[in-house]
Amino acid sequence: MIDSAVTVEMRHLTRAFGSIVAVRDLNLTIAKGEVFGLLGPNGSGKTTTIRMLCGLIAPSEGTAIVAGVDVVKSPDLIKERIGYMSQRFGLYEDLTVAENMDFFAGIYGLEGPSRRGRIAEVVSFLGLNRRLYQLAGTLSGGWKQRLGLACALMHRPPVLFLDEPTAGVDPAARKGFWITISALAGQGTTVIVTTHYMDEAGRCGRIALMSQGHLIALGTAGEVAKQVGGKDLEDAFIILQERDEQEQEA
Ligand SMILES: Nc1ncnc2c1ncn2[C@@H]1O[C@H](COP(=O)(O)OP(=O)(O)OP(=O)(O)O)[C@@H](O)[C@H]1O
Ligand SMILES: [Mg+2]
Image (spheres, rainbow, N blue to C red):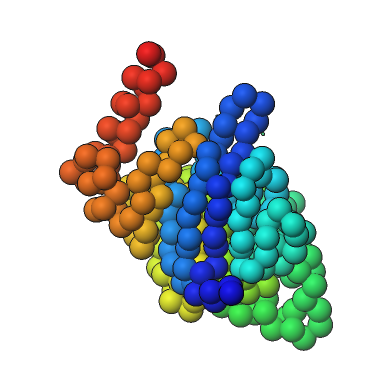
């Protein structure tokens, strides 16, 4: 029986690139409406995990169910059930804000009045009204991020993947962004987010801490810190990085 409260389930999810095992035997269950953080040093496998969950690359072993769809059996069905924002926000820089949104609405099959209605809703939700005719390439980092999110939300996906959504975004914009994320989660959207900022990690309900493709710790920020032997998340992260460096030297 499929548990409707579970929106993402990873089972032995594994991906190798040649001799590098980027993600190793990941088993995780994420519930509807959770804000779930993927945390870990550079190269620990966060992006590779997200790419498998979005159906962009196939697992080498194992599988995952995302919003009811098996990523191995039906990768093409996943795209309509998820929103994905990559680090570069995936925008067309030589199109205006309005044209970018219209383009994404078209990709997701929205037509006519429902297309116009949904674009208006997203514009209002993200406060994009006064930027509609500006070229995306000329927006500041914070506005690009909002537009990226607008495009990723166009088809009301139940699951949203955000890969380092706040890289290159100023503190005020980051704060606003997290308020938006909480609002989305409150509406029942499941959010899976990677970040290198510890204050942001602390805003996630649960965190999976990864290192060299392995899941090292899982739980709230406090629980994860404790599992690694740190007094807080930042401390835990430093312990983990030192451990990785020692292993690489050995
Ligand atoms: N297409 C690829 N071909 C070969 N190796 C890859 C490929 N994609 C990722 N890797 C390797 O897999 C490992 C995990 O990379 P990944 O991008 O998932 O890490 P990450 O946790 O997202 O890192 P970062 O914090 O730097 O974004 C790294 O060793 C990386 O070099
Ligand atoms: Mg990455």
